[in-house]
Amino acid sequence: MIAKSACLFATTVGVAVLLSACSSGDAAPPPAVTVSATSSSSAPGASAASSPSTSAAPVKVDPVDAAFKAKVDALCQRWLADPNRSKAPFYMGNPLSLTAAQLPEAGSWWDSLAVNHELVGSMSQLVAPAKGTDSWSSLLSDFKAFQDRMTASIAAAKASDLSGWSTQVSATESAKEAIRSDLTRGGFSFNDPCQIVFARDASAGV
Image (cartoon, rainbow, N blue to C red; front, side, top):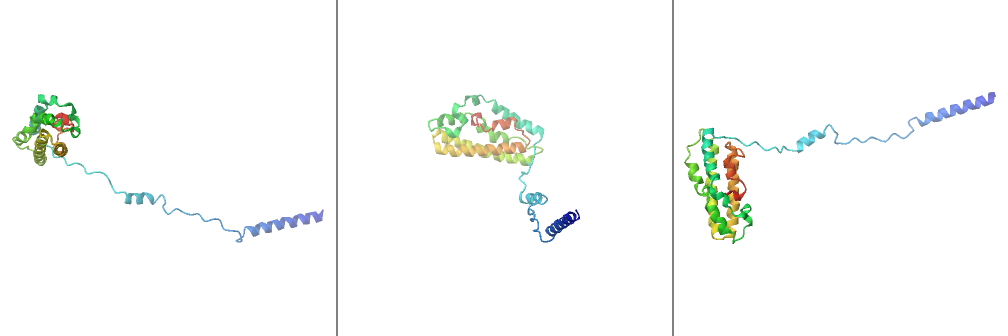
C-alpha cells in the first residue's frame, strides 16, 4: 500500500515537472498578430484628403425688377400666342433629322414666326431695368446671337443646304441654352413665358 502511494506520488510529481517544462520559455511563441496599415481611424482622413469636393458653385442670381420683368413677359406672351406656332411641320421635333427635301418647308415656317424677326428690336426698346442690369445685358447679347443664328438657319433651309442647316441649327440650340441660363439668372423661373419661348423643342417655333 505504501509502495503504491509512493509510486503515485512520483508519477504526479513527474507530470507536474513535465508540464512545468512545457510551459517554460522552451515552447514556441504564439504567432504574431498583423495589424493592418490602414486602420479605421486613419481611413476617413485619407479618404477625405484624396476625394476633392465635386459640388458646383451656385449660380449667381441677378434678378431684374418686377416691373421690368412684366414688360419682358408681355412680349414673350405675345410670341407664344402667334397663330403660326401651331402650324409646325410634324417633323420639326427633331430638326437635325430633316432631309434636304423637307428643309424649304421648315425654313418657311421658322420665317413666318414673329419672334425670329422681332426679338432683338423689341427687347432692345425696353427701358433698362432698375435692377439686374448685368443679367439683362447678357440677355441682350444672347438675343442678338440667337437671332443671327436663326436668320442663317432659315437661309440654309430655304436653299436646301443640309450641311449648312445642321451647322446653324446646332449653333441656334447653343444660343437658346445660353438664353435659358441667363433668364434663370435674371429671375425668370423655368415655367416663365420666356423660358417656354426658348424651350429645347424646335417645334415650339424657335
